[in-house]
Image (tube, rainbow, N blue to C red; front, side, top):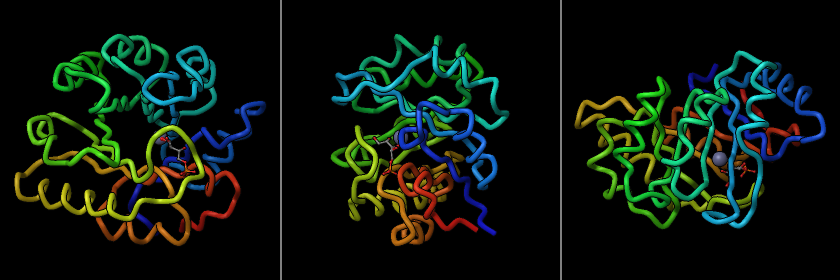
Length: 209
Ligand code: DX5
Ligand code: ZN
């Protein structure tokens, strides 16, 4: 029995039937619903925003793990919190004001996550690690489901776990991108607490027990 939280990503779900897809998450040991918000600027694609989150909020009690791949997340924290997000993760690279964005998320009574792209070293995060609830390590470049994991990114999880122990901190470590039955053990061994899975979960092949 795994102690990690499985957070299936709706990006690979059938958008025409989100009710059934959320039920699939509940029935297959999902502990949170990972919702990827893309703005066509921070990443090229555009997905969905607050109205969709608001309408699926009534379908489940599971926490909504909202991953904002958007520029200037500070402009949208309040509206995503009001739409039903429980954990709000924004990108370190998308704002000049990471510390303030964390404060804003906390003021809305939500858990604050900070995501890092593959090209961003974790050493840049030292000032915000004491106040973050979640650090989301991207193990692919953000923007698309179904990509291959970048193995060097998995080392960041181990680094952040060690740092957490050495400094008595409490953030959870989340891993997002390229997780399948071949790569799952490597991210768990590195110390991840939250495993995001999109394509592998929704094609029904992920073995999670
Ligand atoms: C990618 C998203 C991921 C995506 C992962 O930018 O942040 O959450 O859904 O998809 P897979 O698991 O297919 O790599
Ligand atoms: Zn994501």
